[in-house]
Length: 421
Image (cartoon, rainbow, N blue to C red):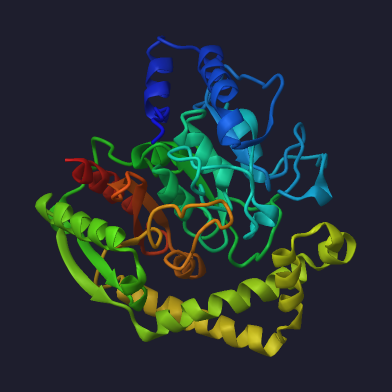
């Protein structure tokens, strides 16, 4: 079992602000770690030869990995596909431009699965190279988990932020839909595609979100401590839970016990039928939209696509507009039920994945516990801290009402501390 000492974003920034580290040193630490570790982990599709190091901005000296479906004007953007080998956009994706304006150093492009879909890439899990790191944000999660960089971007259309974060034992944050800009990414399903963030722990990823956006998202600030007794935490008892691995079910039970011991008001809550039906509509919505937005790619580059990607786009083009509209109506009903559910509870806890990272690199894992929340547009975060019988990471997913991102991150940071006690 590999030992990976992760970089804490908060610790790096604290050292910088105290004059104990400068931006050049901070970036040099990442460059050295990438040179030493990435030949084995294969998290980077491209590493900047001479990255720009800013002296100004809240993220000055912070080396950020950018998932290779985000456009970057100064580095190749290949969308995980040989069809786009060497592609050089003329402008940055909006989130990349925002990171630069806040002083971040774009250290490189992290590996994405093909078009951020299911076909696995070469990246391995830093905890055990025989296991998948998850997908589609494979490289971002693995690079942070391996201690190469303190922060990275990702995207989620089904479970592509939360699941790899769980498998790699780090924090992955999928914000409320459109809280982070999506302009300049390779879209697969525009009404689902969501930009997310990775860092070592929940407090780190909340700090990243706050400094990146200028929004009031920082978790665990002194003037707004979490009062556990006022937070209703619900274990989400959906039908899928019975299919989770025993170790994951045990981890969820332990999480509930530790939350209760920390003073949170913990109970169970069942899944409304409308939300279960909405989950079933996810695939039709995703595939129909992929058939539209990736249709030109199929026509021009179909011979360079994996079978699974080409088949999905083709199948999406065969879905009727009427079937797509019906699926969207189910999603709308599901969102209404979700709003009503959050009148009864503040935070939901669910597995972040069915279990630990599967053995083998033929699959990126199963998004069954994530895709509903992507479709609902609600914020979610993976809370690391548990292990299976083999020592592989297990994550607990926390979910909150749409727009309650700061509350989610504050509570999740408090829960992460409780899980570690």
